[in-house]
Length: 323
Image (tube, rainbow, N blue to C red; front, side, top):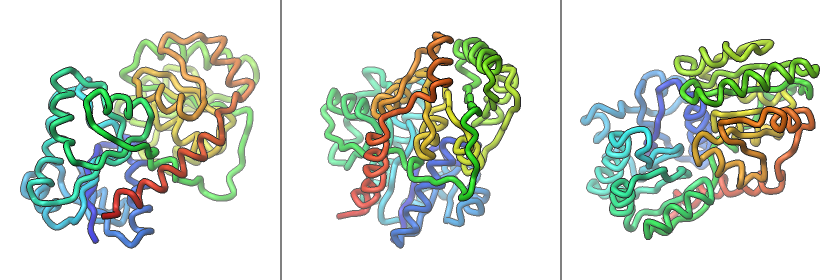
């Protein structure tokens, strides 16, 4: 069986590539052939040893849908119109095209929203009679407000594991900024400075080099790690003692690796993940002392809740594939 996967793949965003890595591994483990729709299909096929097709070329896209039995829309935060109504049009268009071709469609471990009133109506219409699996409880609430039923899964990247035999340094703190969330950057600079004064070694982790490198370099950290490779990012996080993340997948990979973390909630999806995990989250106008205190104490999330999130993520694959 072939499963096409629609998401933000092939753009060099380490978080989305972590999702791609996890999905392809899990699908292969269940004897399924994954086909990722990608901005750079040749690179995606080579990186994940899977089939891939160009997401923006109509013939390639429709051909990929036509030769697949199931289409997964996700993971990620695809069904929202905060960044652009065009993004929502694209992802809903893929769902509609797949349904017109008679394919079984599953919205898979997405966050839903934020949505305008018009966007909400479009999503509700497109998801009628579609199985919807979301990665956080806030998205379930959003679906209910639209009159759409959903079920709770988990971000696939929670299922990734660090490379074996790593050494954890409890005095190392990872700080993962986001280049377009500039109101958080000044606070992260202060957090970095105070943590270094208190004997912590700080690594600034750039999850999307083209967008985050400048912010990462501006923090004054001991080192800057810029990568598009989710395994490199996960291994760096696994080797640390605490993570402060604006990027959502900085905190998701911390949870996957068993490293305490705090999120900076520039978007509801970050607050939603932290709430579900029992971990602290902060507004972009950071209370620097509070964040530093949590990092120094290595304030832990609810690890039982994290394990349940992982279990839901694992179960969601069976739910997506079953008839």
